[in-house]
Length: 150
Image (tube, rainbow, N blue to C red; front, side):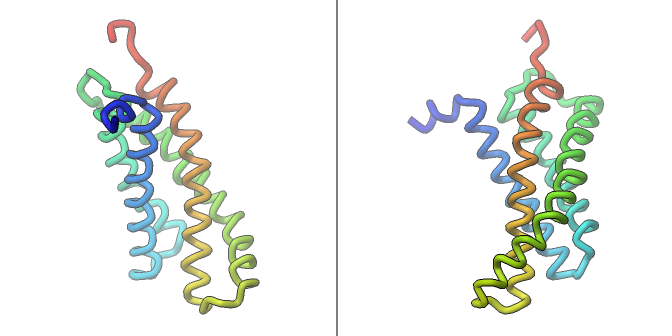
């Protein structure tokens, strides 16, 4: 049954996207809360690392692309993903984090340090969900578009 489910490209995309999102969140949290990087710098680094992993996983697993990875395809992938992951995510984080912070503070059950971590992560997850929709459309129609020979 799992094999049958795995045949759906959208399921594979969701699984690989979840893995990449967890990688991205792990790096972001380590850099912001462990090494005290500014959020936009940490997000840019986390996104760059996860985009690189994402390219190869999407190439081979999600889209089952028959051709070898190329530098040109990687650059297209990196630019499209970079737009959603760096620019789009930074905007979503910047806009939504204060909203989440106020909502979390209204519960008054967490310390300020925990509020900061939670609001950043909820804002990042929101940004990831927005970006995943963008990415799926562009990966399908631009980066991993099937060639007539496929």
